[in-house]
Amino acid sequence: MSTLAGRTAIVTGGGSGIGAALTRALVREGAHVLCADLDLAAAESVAAGVSGPGTATPRQVDVTSAQDLVDAVDAVVAEHGRLDLMFNNAGITFLGNTEDLTLEQWNAIIDVNVRGVVHGVHAAYPRMIAQGGGHVVNTASMGGLMAAGLMTSYVTTKHAVVGLSLALRTEAAAHGVGVTVVCPAAVDTPILDKGEIGRFKGRDFYLEGQGVKHPVDPDVLARRVLAAVADDEAYVVEPRQARIAWRVGRLSPTFVNKMATRFIAKQRAQAG
Ligand SMILES: NC(=O)c1ccc[n+]([C@@H]2O[C@H](COP(=O)([O-])OP(=O)(O)OC[C@H]3O[C@@H](n4cnc5c(N)ncnc54)[C@H](O)[C@@H]3O)[C@@H](O)[C@H]2O)c1
Image (tube, rainbow, N blue to C red; front, side):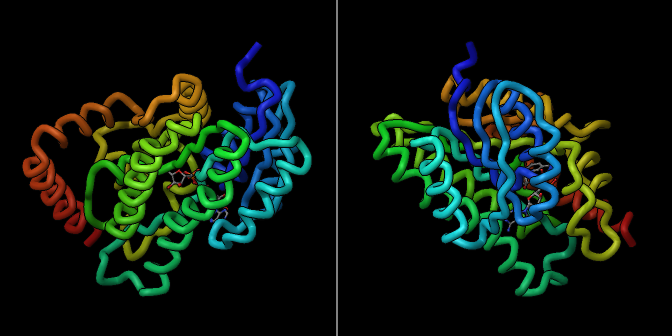
């Protein structure tokens, strides 16, 4: 029997992309999932489409609201007695020149990508300590491990998520709580075509930047994430090209920053 059978989970951003794939994978393994999304119709549609021994319950949750996360955790604990897995996954992006970003856009991305994760940790982590265990999974990005321009606001927030996750992991271990940070390169989800500012095209930008033809399949990534949770791994970095780039970046950060500067100049020239 799967180690996830009968476990309880919350997945934020569960109505689309990686969150939807995580919801499907967890239900297939027998977990009971609160599929939480700002877009309730999307969460309902994902929950209605799952199959497996587990269950998915849709719920409208805005991760920028600390109270929404507290209420979501309370709802799971009231129904099942505990919360085993907290996936802080909801996120947004902007792609464009930083000088074109409004302060509202800066605040929005910090609110969703950073405060959203903080709110999930704040609501779930003390509960996990009290019950004697659990696992927090935060979706960051390759943008949390490496830095390229035109997505500067996104990189800012994802570096914060990596730092939060790795630091928390070192203190959570003593409480039997695991922490995993998910750092994928381009994954085939709607986010690749969102948040474009000016003439930049997200999908082309991300694939060319990573030197890959096809983005990662979200269902493949979700299975990999659940395996990492089972093994209590600190990082999930996918695909292989991303792991190679990450390694080169650690060996020679200045070289990689020069390469990124050239790439951004080329992208700007192409966008006109
Ligand atoms: N797809 C990629 O290439 C990729 C790569 C690396 C990291 N990520 C990260 O993966 C996570 C999931 O992204 P995705 O690719 O599945 O994108 P997606 O756009 O398909 O899904 C994101 C979901 O988050 C929800 N959401 C947005 N704001 C919210 C809020 N305030 N409260 C609750 N839900 C909210 C959206 O409604 C949507 O359903 C994000 O954190 C993203 O940064 C994605």
